[in-house]
Length: 233
Ligand SMILES: [Mg+2]
Image 1 (cartoon, rainbow, N blue to C red):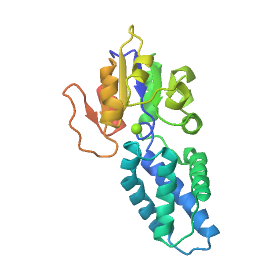
Image 2 (image 1 turned 120 degrees about the horizontal axis):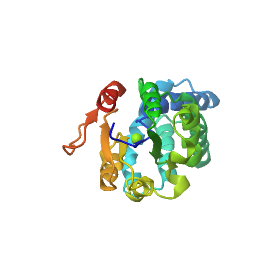
Image 3 (image 1 turned 30 degrees about the vertical axis):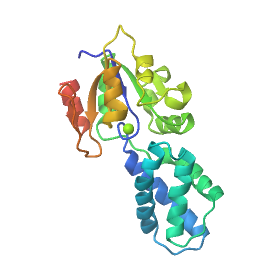
């Protein structure tokens, strides 16, 4: 294999974040509804919550709302929709509970463990470049037992190093000119584009079935079996 270093994004690349998010929010919402003595179905609450997550994401991405405002609004607007009480304090406590539990609901994608084992056996340096909070991301990495393949010094979490994707500086920081680097991620703007700009090769893992125009040199895969074919066979 031509690569000396293979780096991965974390959320929706090594594990199914959508699934973990769904399960964790259901879990947190269940206890919230129980505390309010509400008989509302947790699945109904979740579908409105998810609608607000998607609808409000743009306000956060455009910089109109802080991350905290985004988190408070998606929670409170959902409770308002169902005539349930809500306060900022409660919304933040819900968010905190989510963050402390999401790691325990995270599961590696099928086939990723065997690929990581194989790459490690071949002496390839494995790593992670991820956006997010140091504590939350480290808890997920621990829960997914990724430390068995990926050494701590190769794990770069945006909050911990003060650089974040889609900026290219985080990729330049990781990329040592003497090696040949590959990055695997699930979004074009956050993962593929900045990685290419910093001198990595890139593979697009289409884990959420999106329609994306990719440059010719970027292969697209949607399972770890395909990634295995591409890298090892
Ligand atoms: Mg991702």
